[in-house]
Every structure is written in structure tokens, then in C-alpha cells.
Image (cartoon, rainbow, N blue to C red; front, side):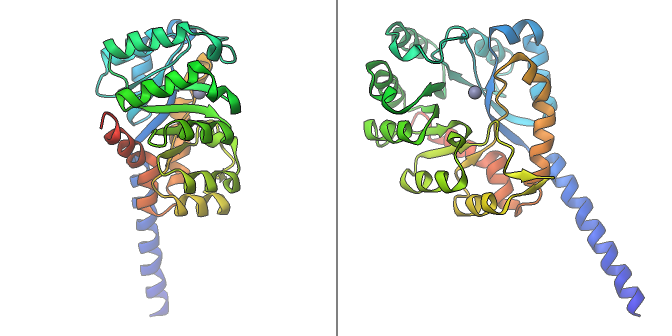
Length: 275
Ligand SMILES: [Zn+2]
């Protein structure tokens, strides 16, 4: 009798494991941090890039590029998959100079008037950069179109963005490379701040979520989203692997929380765009 119960239990555990794996394999993802810049176009042409995003099982990919032409190439052939985000960079090497370049504002204004974008970014800004006229105009443009800002920024810069527009919608790229203790007070203070996990791996060891990070995800279940960050052309080869790795650690979280981080939080942000 004892042996029979153990066998029944074993079968139940195995079935639960199989269904958890099947669920994880099918979990749709939104990758909120994809770039398709000029040097990626040659190596991974648009049709191949879209094939990569689809084989990663992505529901949406938030794509920005230097220049914007790359994003437009992908959006044209897969509008149901690509969420266009407008980058203030026309080529590589503008990360630390763009905030002094007034011509960026004219370029952004012209493109925003012509095309659909869900956000402006990813851009780099630290501390007082946000108070410069170019950044202030970028914040005003996002306010005008009610689109999000995707900011690779320190906590000080994020605070300055919300000081400029308390209603701004902001994705904090890489969660600011902050620790859970540094991220929590920011999410607490700013309800319109989302945090992407792009280029972060310390939240998962051997496929299991670190305890501090799990506590953070549980405290802010609606604020985190995934991202690969294809900041160099070679990173495109990593998109599918990154999606599989994400599904693995997500499968160790409660199902509802995993779904939030996988795609629901990004969808909730998209639902706010334009409103
Ligand atoms: Zn990036």
C-alpha cells in the first residue's frame, strides 16, 4: 500500500514537471530591448532578423536602431511583431554627445510626425544630462505623443525625468544596473516606472531566481520586463538562447508572476501609450 502511494505521488510529480516544462516552452515573451542598428542590417538582413525574433517565440519585440531606418525595415515586414521605438542616434558613437546636439530634436520631431512609435529610446543620460535643453525637449515630445521613454540612466537621471514630467512613462533600461535594494525605492516612488532586465543575469543562478530578486519581483509584480539588448550585431545570435534561458528561470516563479514578467507588463505599458 505504501509503495502504491509513493508511485502515485511519483507519477503526479512527474506529470506536474512535464506540464510545467510544456508551459514554459510555450510561454510567449515580449523582448523590450532589441536594437537593429546599421551594422546589424548587413549581417542579419530584415527577413532573417524577423525569423530570429519569431523563433525566439516573441509576441512583441520593442525595437530601436541607429539610425531609425533599421527599425522601419523590420516594422514594414512584421508590423504585428515589431513595436517601433525611436532612437535619438543616427549612427554609433553618439551615446555621450547626442544630448548636446540640437539637430536631434528636429530629427525626432520630424519622424514622430510621420511614423508610429511607442516610445523614444533607448537613450543614455546620467544625472544633470536630463536638465539639458535637448533632453527636456525629448521629454516634452514623449509627453505630447504620450509615448514612453526608454532610458539607460542612473537613478538621479530617472528622478530628474519625473521631476520634469511626473506623468512620464519610463522604462529603466537594465534596471539602471542597480541592485534590488537600489531598484525597490525607485519603483516605490514612481508608479509609471518599469524596469527592464536586459543584459542582467545575476537574478538567476542555474535557472533558479535569486531570493532577493524574487522578493523584488513579488513586491513589484507589474513592473519588470525582459530584454536581450542586441547592442552589437553578434548579439542577434543570442536572441533565441536568451529567450530559452528566460523561460527557464521564469518557470521557477509562480505562474501569474512569470506571465507578468514574460509579456503582460510590457502589454500593460503598451496599453497606456497614446492615452
Ligand atoms: Zn540597449
